[in-house]
Length: 293
Image (cartoon, rainbow, N blue to C red; front, side, top):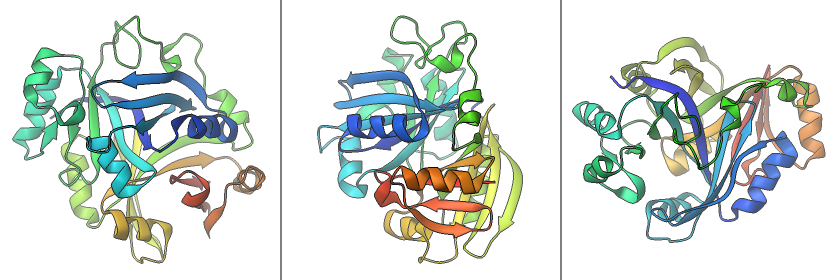
């Protein structure tokens, strides 16, 4: 079993990363982790921001034939994957997951041999094998930073004095977060996450979807969403795109205040349920956000 640690980030693939990064700063009060980084292997630009301690990597691919470019062409602007830190080399992650029947690859589709050459490199799963794509990144607590290596940039979440209190005072009143994933078979998806060491913490059979929340790693809650209808935002996403990272779910202290603030910032509300708001992805650069009390 892979020993999963803290959340690293979620990926939001877009066609204009600077515009979307500015939007996160304006709407969510997001704080920069890094800005305007070019990754040659993936031929993409990115900036990473954090909302409380949930980091979002906003990525703009530039080559349509590479994996991120193919994703953008296929799905448009959309959440792409969830990434986690692990305290082991990538080859160990690769071998452990492969032994469980999970197909894995490295940056831009690279094979295991690249992970041997570059021991601080990520491992990606095939989305069909893990109910949406997951990413695992080696991390060393003795070498802080979002890549676990010094000298590149510093992740503010690992800095002395870091606090999520500013987001609690923000008009959105963010108290916590979850990662939402739409799935066809809730039992199968739950089993996949249980095999990764996750524990079920809650289940809910609502009128629009069956949901299962699991605690994964040291600070992440994953909410698996199995829609009962294609008339909902989650149902349409699953029907169009298959099992995929669907949303960021924010726990708020005041749902009415959050709704008013979102409206003032041009964010449309697509659905209102008791204790839950679902944003219109057309007003959020293809992303879906849920706010729950």
